[in-house]
Length: 438
Image (cartoon, rainbow, N blue to C red; front, side, top):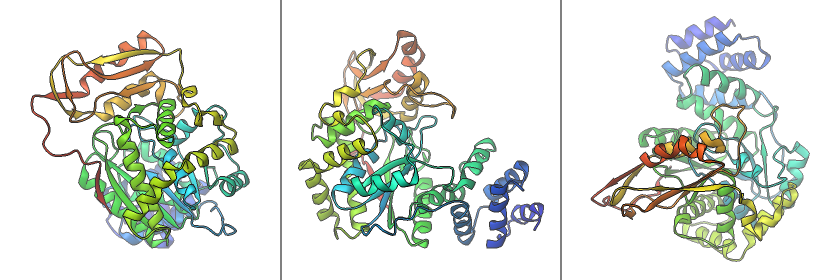
């Protein structure tokens, strides 16, 4: 089966057989397909789309290109949460210990941040000593001991995805929903899960800024997960402003620990609300609770009792991190940073926040990556003092930059100030964090 025959068939809008898709992924993995041939088929898939059977076949072929984790000896429900990425998106660090405290095991294989969105691994590495590069055996042992483990993707899990993602990025085919679904689900299915909760973001700081596109992606992800026997549900959440109080790796971990400790202020409420929603959905999918109400009560109880915080402490110790942050979260903060306030010159109500611009600004001063090889400064970041709908007066502080020097401030001050739109009239209606459940 020649590559050009498969390419031509998809170019002409025909449906590829399972055998043809398997041949494609095999060729990508063993490098018998040249990059230009792979790129040509990716573009044909982008332009012609994939039928449901093609999408499932592609996901399965990518899944089978590598190893699957085997947790057959673990006799408790296995679940995970995946987010499509946003600004200040830190809920994994709260959801995993909550789920573990409720009797669910969470084998979380996570990624790093790129562009304006943050990555869970980068946040974890802001904890001194925390090891995100676990071997398969270390991962299993941590899971059994703590109830959750967090590690990076190994080269043996869905190796075809790594090659395809790099080519999609270089050939402007990243936005294809079928290709996004295959990429996400091939890795998640390799975890051997019973249940998966998806947080699909929409808005100015999301990959899918359009709500209809976010719904389509959520539906496709759920269909694929359920087709492979993993109970899957998606929460579509708002990303028209950064989630919670802080943006930046150490600052976001600080916020999570404060929430787990029950020390919550107004700006942290959205982080808590979304974490409870996602964790509650996970409990229902795993059969631990039957209703949303009882599930949220259970989640709140392990937060109030400190059980979730203790699970987080246990995990940090298991993964060689500095667990004293659970007692003194201020140790996460770098006292050598300078703080620069973003002031408003207007009086009125905040009607719009460009979350993407805030994420990009923090990346520019080292808080994220513009290129994959970029090094991260875990300490720098941003505090969201004012949120959507808040009334502000001229001269008030909208946010605070935490940076190394004044030069960094000059790079981003104007962009951050312009991220806020202030109007005389208050926005109508309540800002809805949870848009829809799919």
